[in-house]
Length: 360
Ligand code: NI
Image (cartoon, rainbow, N blue to C red; front, top):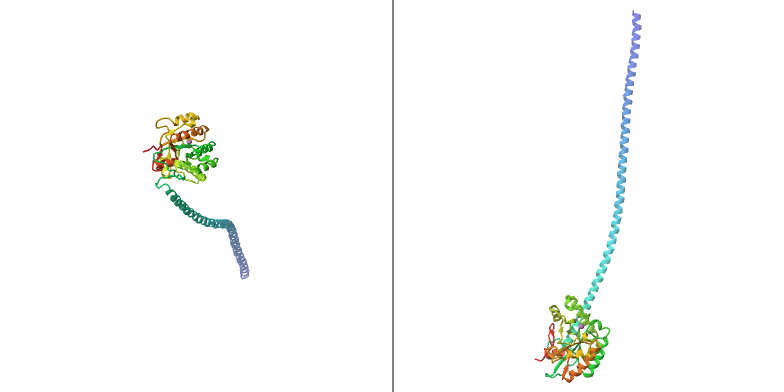
């Protein structure tokens, strides 16, 4: 028994040892499994982190790319803005240069203007001084020929010729000169250039030159500015040739209104109508012209009459020649319109309409 007990104890110990070894092995294996599992978990965690990191990196890369491209855009915009700024700066410099040039131009023009103004003032003073001598009245008398001594008892007549100068005007001037007679010509401005020599001669020989406008319109149908243009351009054309001031207007067709009178008052122009209408333009007949002119009554020739004719017709010049001889025979003195107004109307007034000037 003792012997058996001894071997049993040995077996038990061996078994125990095996069991313990198994337990230890199992424990070791368990530990090993747990470790492997932990390691695998860690590995998976690391992989996930790597993937996260990659995603993050990609995200950052994208952001970086975006930012770079934004930076590029911004740089391009900045360059464009700088270019624009330079261009604007250059334009500003040019504009400043132009402004300063214009300023000096303006100063120069201002100086020229003031020089011309003082020249004009001097000329006006001279003109006033020379016109004051023959005519002490404040009338706008324009006759520069010495005033003939006309007795108070003289029968006066003013022969007036419209619409010229023309081809027949020179012959009329010859006939007037032969008889020492003076007439008044109401000239159309757009004919002045073509007949400048005839017009100059008429003025030089002591005839009076008035305006009949530049292109013969009905002045009452025109605005104030158009009236002014028609009248002033004709006056300028006449004065350029004669060098003498124009102070008489005969409106085409005899058409005038209050506005024209107001304008003429401002411009120192007397408006001339007529008392004898020969209607020479209509009949073109010497005998008819003479019969009409020498009719009895207020519409025929008499002391102070103003006779209307047109020096652009041969028949008118023919009639005028006979008229002049008959007037001389009847004791008339032919005078210019300004002379008639000076002798009978105190020179007349600007803006007023004169039809005739009978003795008082
Ligand atoms: Ni006319």
